[in-house]
Image (cartoon, rainbow, N blue to C red):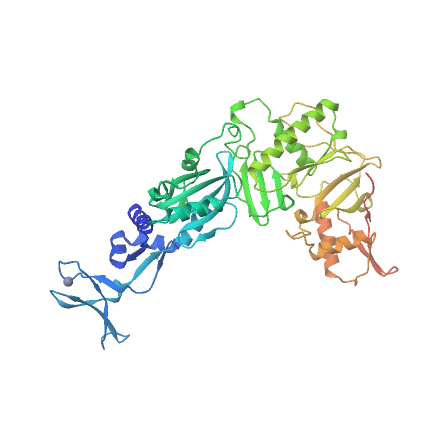
Length: 490
Ligand SMILES: [Zn+2]
């Protein structure tokens, strides 16, 4: 496979990315099949020139077509030969394949797990591949095929199109052509050193690239964190993170990736075992409270509050490193004095509502709150305890027990499946909102399927067997059996 791949790279670098049948035959069937299947090589039209294989001259001749009754097409290909006069060329030998450089650019971007879309900046010569965090910084990666004298155009265009402060330029071809042109803030790497092809797929060595990148001293600590490739333009609200025992499960707009805690920058090995990871503790606290920490409710007074403040600041930096998303990942809401994650966060396995034993729909109050969220308050005599702080020797935190003895939790409707990723409610979600807005009453037919489906969903989610929404013939409307209405001051 190496030979075919090397030939493909060097031919592309020369600006003549076409292979004849004779050449591909020397590679062996698997190599041609794999490169074709990957889309890097595409079969094109018939060759117009063919090398003579009838004499020892190996002379290249233009193909001549003559009518022939022996061919189904009625035409036969020949080349002239000084020895054999005319040589018949079987149709097979006229097959040829060319390199799809756009496809190569796309596959490099995919192998590097870059965020953003691949852009052809200079047709056939320069591509902007996307962005990710490498060696402690966000970097835009470009791919260039440098053939003859276009070094200046390529470097100038790449510099002009660099949006991050730092860039990587992968060069296929004559890198010397770039010498003398201004490529400050770019690390220029030879594509053949970094890009390989094996087992039918293109691969990029990120380790090699990271080793080649300059490492800033200030970035040293978070240098091990590579960013998570999420779609460009993703907002924090579209991100959902489940905190599991040893990993984070990240979801966004159909994209899903499980990051080990180490990959996410937690459980720093250099600190050695036994040192608890304080940012992780605070992240788990956020997760256990569905993304909110009210400072006034923390036990331990000012010392504890200042500890949480410090870790929130660490978490902000951490999440900005992990995700190329603009804006603040953790928002301080000054008036209630609380931190709110701009993304959805929960503990792993926490998919259903933790309904207290013996609760009925009469114990529930559901309210619509801002940002496509709903809040559920449930009356309970017991005080909930935040879960899973085994590695923390500090006292466990209690959940918020309100004056009316309700425990409140907020959920994004998207995470619950009651709204699409766009935030637009599903029919069930819309029905729930209508019920909440009309304080528990809904004018719909007795056999309205959406109401029935919503009722079933609420039963399954909470584990309460009774119907939450029932049709009243007297009132000629659907009536909610939980409390609902505009948000109360809590
Ligand atoms: Zn010949």
